[in-house]
Picture 1: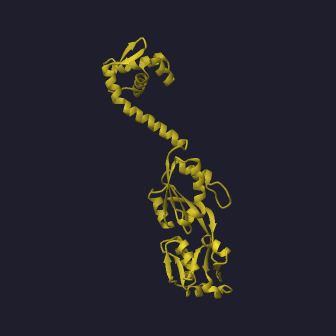
Picture 2 (picture 1 turned 90 degrees about the horizontal axis):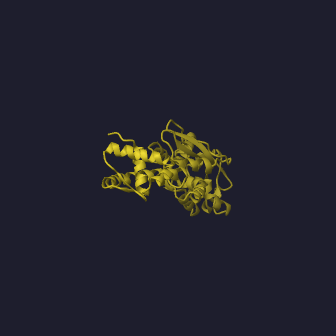
Length: 303
């Protein structure tokens, strides 16, 4: 049996409203079209579905049974339609973001704050991890987009868009004040007690490569999980800290830390937006990127 689903839609509406004219108004079709659809359905099912009364229509026993069977499904269809309308109106939905402590704090967080204020019903999940983990999560479809730091290479799985410049530096406290007026080559710096991030981070890989290019092998005194901890170790004289300058700026401004001068200056790096090429992004994520996120020059990001 192959019955036009529109007939069931008309039947459901008539049964729910108890009136052919009311159903016609609700469905934006004529009363004869409603009556014709009910007649076709009754013929196909070989049963009467309604009793006609002076006040409208009333379900027969068979009509009542059919209504009870199809109404849950039709209600689900209506809920699904409403959900997608909400999603397209940014009144519902979800986005999954990957970011490190640094990219979240010094780039993404203000944009998330503004977006959440405008669209509070969109659920935002942030997975916190270093660049390699974020790249892997994007390739596996576990996040919708990520904010990472270079070095990161664009490939067939993702597009990389620079959004903010960052500067790495070595900072120290009063215990190392004798170094303040000096310009140090990396070879000499490698012999000093250093505090760095763990090897799994892009920042650590970047500085390791710089030392290798100068023919140096570094063995840090401490390897820590966060840049905030590195700054705290430097403040207490527990080594010379390698961090992105943003983390140490307030202490540099107050004179509690100083930045070491290097004979081989460290080139700037970038925070980057990574977006998938193999997976579609939810509407909310696309809206956040295109309408909220900015590049270093204040330009909108175009996907």
